[in-house]
Image (cartoon, rainbow, N blue to C red; front, side):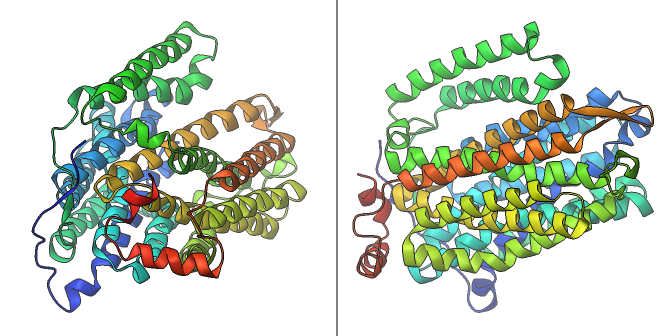
Length: 496
């Protein structure tokens, strides 16, 4: 594989622009997460507003999930090769364009296509983290990466109540005009404040690898996300799973033989990289159950005996403290990683997630206990999600940071999709009639919390098995790691 080649860096600008690079990238990460959640308050009303079936409307979420999963590693690789800032502008521009299209139409087919465009924004966080790695000195890198990682939870916590307010008091198209305006602002800010990374890995883009990964992921995630609706034993779902195994197997074979593969599987096979990806998948599963189950639990009717009957706006406000906590605790994650290493931070974060679910199992009837448990899970997610990019950055060459982080985000996405399917399966099998309508039982919710907690403990165990940097544990090793970080090519040496 060709070695990373530096290119002449664009002028960073002085003063204000240089200081605003991190805030601008954080703004883009928050807006990306907001974009993913804004359609949630609309889902119950979209069949009436668009004249489409509930099954078709659900694709407003599924389409964005699928395109994000496919495009994140592809755009990450493109960023490593052609410039991270350039690809970041493209992905954010596609998100803004999708918002404009959604604002102009009520046709469900066009809306789904526009949401597919918006899925490109999922690459914003890994691209931004790679830019920070290339541009910042080592002493600022950890806190900036931690902040960037926390934007996913912050944006999700802000997006739900904000979108619910817009939907409740204005025409639903206004919500997309707002995100379009914010997206356009983000494009302008990126062009003004974010420098192009000087680190690139030249070569030819692996088009067959990109197409194979896209086909394999679409069939896999489609089967996972639609299994509950189409039936896990149906011919369609079984066929999709078999197709995904076949396509991904051929893709793996191609990647091992390609001179410049889309994903360097030899790098992935290294324990420090591969186990980090496994931990990302498990953490994504554990994290996603928190907001998914909490939202349904507090909106359940009071007649169920446990539900609080909250509105969507009130539900969003319940999740808001978790988002604020993620923002506040991101510096702590950076400090732990600096002192003890990111694998310790990841293990602690996963353990905190598990303890949050323990709180949920003990008491999920009182609102304040529900909020405490959800906030504890959010705190653990901050620690874990902030540590994962740091693990990747320390283990891969500088020329592959965007593609490696993109693959790590892909593993989180697969974990989230699997979590959604697992939670749905649990709740469907634990229902009771309330007012003539089937409603999940409290036991079903508690079981879902228990499963998520067990997966979090598994993530903790995987984190503890990740090989540490030589001499990285303890004060002496920390100083040695700091010294190694002064070299631009630290990741290339540590992964060997």
